[in-house]
Image (cartoon, rainbow, N blue to C red):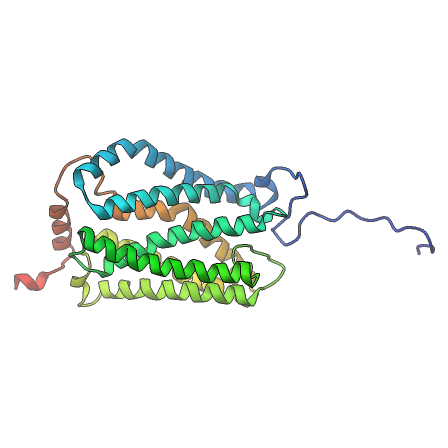
Length: 300
């Protein structure tokens, strides 16, 4: 028993303020080991860095192809892809900010603009698909980016209000507590995305599929994104109820999204345009449409 007046020796506490979310002390060490873990960060950084290097390696040929093709949609999409890819690489490289005292606001701002940039590409591609087979030219570009800009503007405004106005930690995970409002907002967000991807997915499998671009690559993209968002919705719903599985699954889906979404988008929407051969893309698309069984009724 400790005698009165005898000071009790203080036991130094771990720098971890939350399970799996240590906070670095002032002048702390290397973040790859102290925050999410080196494997988590490398799994994010390596694919993102390799994709940026791939874009850089292809940039001369890509610009030449763009100048010859004169496609407003492809030019705009390629430029935005470059900006978002660099922003995503910065986000992946600065994971330690989430765990560093004094960096919470900077991390939230970086996360807000990175996720909004990626969401802009998602919404733009969905808007393009929903315009049908004849979406091309300046008019389609205006409609596509106009719709996407309005949606992303509202998304940024609402996330900014909740993050910086109401103090909801949308972009900071704390495994010690369940923030009901935060996870409720993410459930709504994922529910909307899952619903739109699900709508396009079932349109591709219905008699209205002729109204959509008939490229198998687009169908595969929609299938993947529908599955990913459905899993993310399930993870957020579990996390809202305090389930550790939900937190882990949401973390995994976030890592996979930031590591592989942009390469998936490139393969789906831009890769054919930047092929070395000069085959006319309309002939390629027509062959894919015919092989996929679209417009069979036209031959009857």
